[in-house]
Image 1 (tube, rainbow over the protein chains, first blue to last red):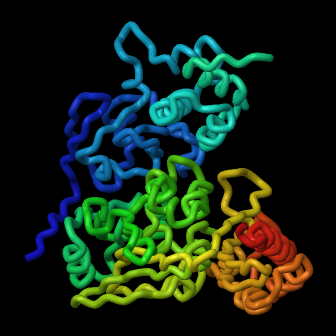
Image 2: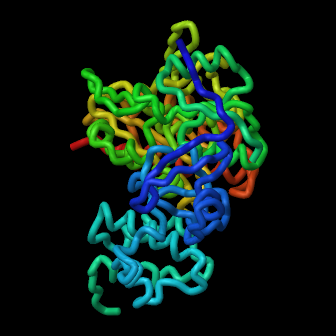
Image 3: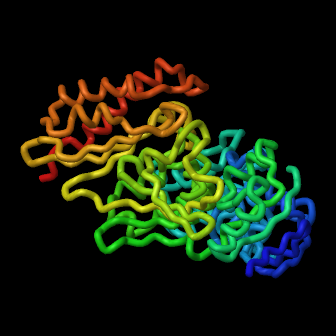
Length: 166
Length: 289
C-alpha cells in the first residue's frame, strides 16, 4: 500500500560546510532564505531571485546551483557548501579567496561569494582551465560593476596559470 | 510563495497513486528551475507537491542494443551534456545541452521537466524532434504509451500528456547510417538567453551529394516547437547544392508562426528562421569522406 506522509513542516537534515545540521522547514522555504534567515550564513547573497545572477551560488553535492531556485526540502540528505565553508581554517583562505584579494577580483562585493563558489566548482573539475573555459563557465555569474577581467585574472591566478604579455 | 504540502515519492507507482488520489491539486517537482519560479510568481499554486528526485527508475542514460539512446526523465541537462553514451550517439547531442542557460540551471533542470514545462523556446525539443525521439509515458492503472516528440507539444506551455500520465523517459532511435546532427541557435542578446531562433537538423548525404535522410526541428518559432516538413520534403532525394538548400530553406517562412517579443518582430524571426535553417543544413551538407 501507498503511504505518502503529507506534512506542512518538514524535518530536514543535511551536511552544511562539513557539519550535519537539522532544521524544521516549511515546504515553500528556499535554500537561500534558510541559509540567510534561519541559519544566519549571510555570505550567500540574494540578487535577482530568479536564478539568473548567480549571487546565491552554492554547491549541492559538489554541483553548482542557485540557492534561490531550490526548495530547502530538496537538499534533505545532501551536502551543501557555501562561501563560509570554502576556507580550510579560520586563519587560512582558499587559493581562490586569496587570489580574488590579490588580483582585485571584486569591486562592490555583492557578487563575490557567488563568483568564488562558481570558480571553486570549475577548478574542482578542471584544474587548469583556459580563459575561454573560464568565461564559458562563469557566464552565469553577473558582476554589475563589470569587473569581469579581474575576476578571470583571479581565477587564473588561483589555478596557478601565469599569463604572458599582460 | 503560497505554502503547500510536500512529500517525496519513492517509486513511479507511488507517484501515479498520488495522481489518482489528488488529481488537479497536485504538481510534481523535478529539478525545480521552472516550477519554483512559477510558484514564487503565483502562476502555479498547487496544494500538494510531490518530489520525483528519489525515484531511481527515472534516472540514467542507456545506450540500447540497437544503438539508440534512452534517457530517464529525471536526468539533468548536465548529466546528458557530459554523458559518454550521448557523445557516442552523436557529439552534437550533448553539445546542444551544453548551450542551455548556465551551468547552475543545467545542474538542476531535468530533461523530463523541460519537456513537460513546454516553453516553445527551449533547446532540447527541436533537437529531439530532429532525432525522431519518443516520449515514454506511464499512466495510472498500469498504462503506458510512447508519444512522438513532434506530437508532444500541443500549444503554448501545453503538452499531449494526460492528467493521469507521467513522463518516464525519452527514447532516441538509432542514428541512420551516415547521418549527422547539428544544432544552431541565434542569440543576439546574451549567451544565456533563450534562442531568438533555434534549428536542429539531422542529415544524411550520399557520396554523390544526394540527401538520403533529413529531419528538421525548430524552436522559438511558434507557440510550440515545430518540425519543418516542407523543407525536408524539398530536399529529400535531391542533390544538396547551395542553390537547392537556399530555395528549400526559404520554405520555412511559411511553416513558422513566430510570436513577436523582446527578441524581435514576427517578420524578423521569420527571416531569421530562413537564414538559420539554411546555415544549419549547409553545415552538414558535405558528404562524409
